[in-house]
Amino acid sequence: MFQEPLKFFVVFFAVVEPISLLPIFSGLTQGATREYRHRMAIKATVVAALILAFFALVGAPFLALMGISLGAFRIFGGVLLFLLALEMVFARESGSRTSTDEQAESQRRADISVVPLAFPFISGPGALATVLLWFGPVPLFRHPLVFLSLFLAVLVVLAISLVIMWLAEPLMSVIGVTGVNVAGRLFGVVLGALAVQFVIDGLRTVFLLHTG
Image (cartoon, rainbow, N blue to C red; front, side):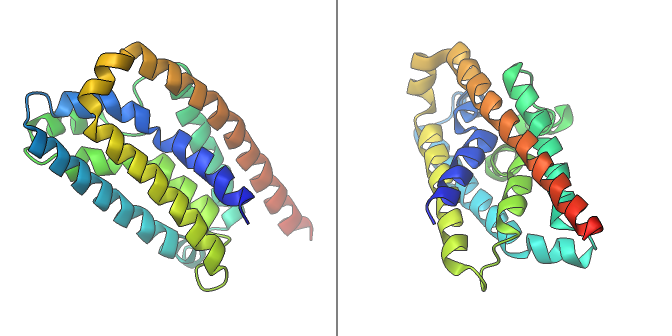
């Protein structure tokens, strides 16, 4: 009961990587008032929660409607998370989160909460794939307690992200860019190993499906 939510929390925390929001949020809100920073952080967190809740509820039925098995998506999700882990380990700018054009557009926006904060930085492709992988086998009406415990882990990660964005300025002065990169590398190693396990589980599921 508690093992799966805890494991999911570790994976989801590594994918969202709230610490990486420090330089991003600090740069996007440089020179802004405290009220503006808090408003953007709250709105981004709420929008990200709605996006993730939507994918948790309808992601698996949508895959079934498209004729995509959870095993196949588990393989793709594992590969996607592995690529994200490589970017984290080598401290590269994440192309799986946002493109150059999106970054340029964000600099011109007065409201940065939805794009690029909520999507694609917080609830990006990696986070959405992770939600589909974990929530797919446990639909709300069949396994309500497991579903709610997993979504509680999502809310905890989002709450941590919100606090980090609120405290971006003082934390950046203490941790610095180097500290953020070191933490990112550590999370990347863990995420890479879990991504490989996703691929192995997906291959096993597909193999048993076709041989059974």
